[in-house]
Length: 416
Image: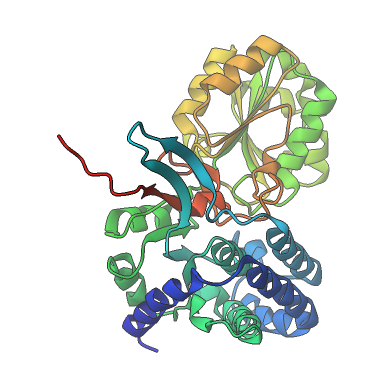
């Protein structure tokens, strides 16, 4: 189907979606969860066709890869979204004016949301579930690396919608033709919002070229500052988890910032990283401390380009600082405003860090691995917004809605 037809049909479908009862939407989501588990073999077969075309050493490979366990996790997220209350129709503010006129601020869907993303087939299901639950139709432009996976997942989405007599046009997958991206970015009459999810290069391209409004879901260049007053055991566990739980995600640790008074604890802080073969790009002070205790094949001297790098692999940098203020300056210079953490038992330092750091999610003695819609109790998320207009952090149900004012009266007119 030509893109213009898809845009027209999706806009038309968005009008009918407004009349679908919340209970039926929940039934669709739960049915889709069952379909994912029932057809996990077919999903894995489609995914294998994608992974066979990508080198396993590619940082995007882990994002692309589906397993039976990951499919079960996606199904679980679907059920979580179904269990959440609908944000639609919620009264955000209510005013009665002296003339008897009542004014209500009510939550409503955007209408049609276009999502452009790279090799992450789970995003296909996350986007659909959140859009459907919030009353939005979605147009999906996944990366060509994940085309076979996305194609089969959208087939299951359409089966779930059709099973309950709903329009399959509530969700559409575009082809791998790159020219469609540009057309989507300029579909002002048909698309209300564009959300890019992927590399900084993709996000910048969308921001620069779109005439449709854009919400950025930025790259994750994430830091953890181990303070003068940090607990070593907490620090070791937080650093290891943030770096190695899943290296290809945007909330993975990229740079450990270490107070210079804690250099003697660096061996213990990195002991698990050594076992997991994490490559460390260390500044001069940390390199000199690690050179006698960290595997030489995994230890390198840091260069300036190692700071401000999103590694998406078993690599990280270390920066030594003389004070909390210096740590804050380093984060301000190199952060992507995604997720930043402090490890400290000093209440005042934690308070200063949380107040000062400009990021969507700021952590005190917690791993940055938790920047995720499901972990925040939001069911799932379309992405992590790193901008400040409209939405920031995990973009779940409420963040992909807008509002309108409804004014009721009994013939009131304005006299001045």
